[in-house]
Amino acid sequence: MIIANVGSGSYIALSKKCPHQGTSVEYRPDNNDFRCPNHGSEFATSGAVTKSPATSGLTVFKAVLSTDKNTLTVSS
Image 1: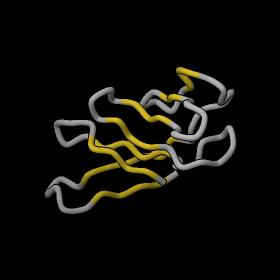
Image 2 (image 1 turned 180 degrees about the vertical axis):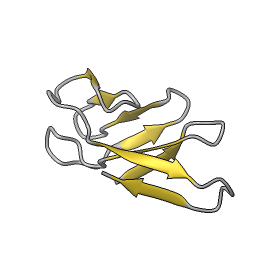
Image 3 (image 1 turned 180 degrees about the horizontal axis):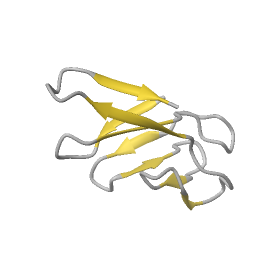
Image 4 (image 1 turned 45 degrees about the vertical axis):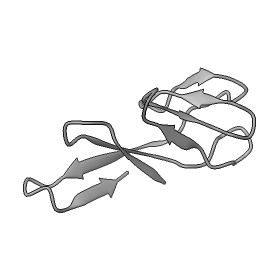
């Protein structure tokens, strides 16, 4: 799983493995997206594929920051 702070106290959690061949994706904060360094697949923060060769998206998990901002809870 990969967790990214997408600004203003908002977090997202997605599967870390590229569905194409299982390589770990990387978050690119400047582009606000994820990229697989193996074959170049790219994914939106929603998990959707934006550039192939991957044909399916990343699994998205629910990420909730507590009101005191000390605990991040991730669930399916």
